[in-house]
Length: 355
Length: 130
Image (cartoon, rainbow over all chains, first blue to last red; front, side, top):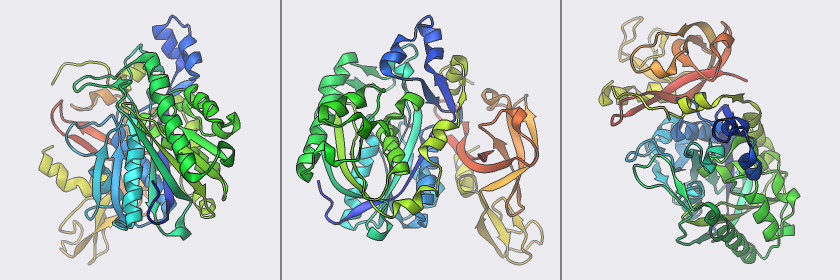
């Protein structure tokens, strides 16, 4: 899918909560200190939202940072979409809160998206369409989650919190990076789900890999490269969804990318899987370090299942924007480790009497 | 807090909007229709600076109802960059690290949650500037 007129990223911003739970602490509680699962998943620690953080507060912080980089007056943003699978309200949009806080209301289109871990790139695809059609001057897409994982489950090692926001515009002189082409690949593949009223998701264990993650990312990425007439070696960086430290490396190798092309985007080992924020945070880490002229192949994955692949070309405008807001590494490096009990308290996993 | 009352305070809670008096220049961090200094009704909304420093603070160990699970937490009187003083919780910090003069900036957080079926109230808090 090619935008009808050129569109590009004019601002990006991220947020990762400050607290971390180390894999060895999870292993101490659930596996007698044997840390095999974390080693298999290549996870050192994961981010933990504080007791007063949720996907809305995370989205607000990321959006605020994106606006700083864009240097835009917020009232020029015509649409704000937030993708998440950890909405604090079952019925009541979070996007209205984000729009209100950043000052984009009231002439703004706002909605919440859900597509497991690719809800953020669904939001981005819609924003690209609205900006390229001229219906809005600028639009913002956010992926933000406080991911759920059942205590003791494999997901307990990875489910974390964080988010990333992207502002899309059509004025070429403002581009940090141009969005040249996108390709979406979706099937009904039931690899991971959460029923209404259930606090934690269920998953198909190894079924989440080949028929789900690998298949959708490979097909979307190949479809994108076919549409662009490109090959893996034409790209400086490749960014994939990061449910653990192993999958993005494996899918990169299967597609013909080198470890060097993918490794800079992999941050899951230090912050965990931020679900809707995961691939978008990986992309932000690349924008933090990319140079004008660099080419990026980006591909998300959301269970259920689908992938959005995007061909991105970095432009001269990126340099002046990089230092206008905190970088991904600033958030990764500033952390405080907590124990498992504090983690349960912060995540609201301890039951109390109703008052 | 009732939903209408919370809704009326949203510009203050979400965007740190206050009031400035066009008659005497007095600035208050709250949204007012009448200037609390001179009584003039010639007032307008103003966005307050999002950065400041700790002017004074206290650590709460006996929290009021609804805040028991935050215990202990820090409430600071923050002197914003324009000199306006405002009360707010200081988060993402060990209470022992808070000192007068500590540089802080606004962050957006949950303030309180009204049971299992009521609304979630959001608003500003402050965190140390790194």
